[in-house]
Amino acid sequence: MVVFSRIIQSPLIQHRVFVNFRGEEIRHGFLSHLVAAFELHQIIFFIDKDERKGKDFTHLFKRIEESKIALAIFSERYAQSKWCLNELAKMMKLAEKNNLTVIPIFYKMKVDDVRHQKGEFGHHFWELAKVSSGEEIKKWKEALELVSYKMGLTLYDNRYYT
Image (cartoon, rainbow, N blue to C red; front, top):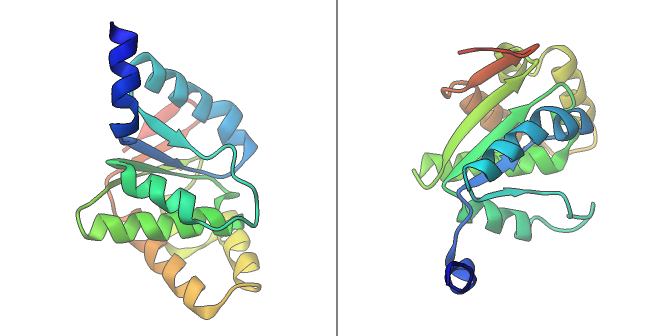
């Protein structure tokens, strides 16, 4: 009976958590523990693991819109990805309208490096900016600044600081 009920309800279920991140070090480390916790507590989540490069963002933006919470997991390599930065910009637009709660997680990162595109994070950002439009860069910088002022977590070597 429970299985039947879940099948009927599944098309109506929205993702509760959208996870935005970049890099294998996140996927096979921190994220694997996060996914295990989500599954243990039966939290519905979306992690982009099957999208192909070059495909448009429509599918991912729909998943973001279906979510109640979005986690932006920043690492040094995060700013190498237009995908991550465009997802973040979409997340922050929805957050401004109170349609999404965005929680930043600074994984072995300084908040200030994200806010001001400094350090290794900044290096990757400005390399990507060289092959991006001025409008994209402006949108990304605004999103990075806004998200860096939100309440979140900073994680270093198995310890967290708020």
